[in-house]
Length: 132
Image (cartoon, rainbow, N blue to C red; front, side, top):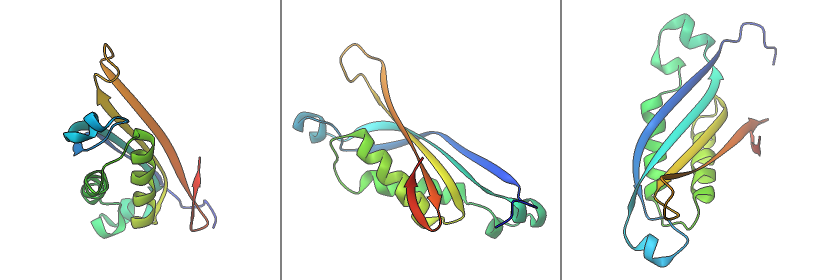
């Protein structure tokens, strides 16, 4: 596919609050925690820019709901696992998204650290998920 006529767009969801059971230790997973999730997606917005229709755009409200559903679906030990599952869900549900970056932040773990953040990026490639 040619890049001619393409309009690259970036959507950033900052500070999405989610509740999830996550942590390396049983005691951490025993009580759901509030986490901060940031998501950046890139896609070709040429049709949306031209037509001014939501159906031609990536619905960031729907992405937020997808991320909440993934995070609430099951307990996890690692932020890396949760971020990877979120990225994979976005790419699977929104094939027009070319790249997605997920960052998940957890407060006060380890002790004395205000916040720990894990981020990763995934790239849509020829209809397959890949790492970027």
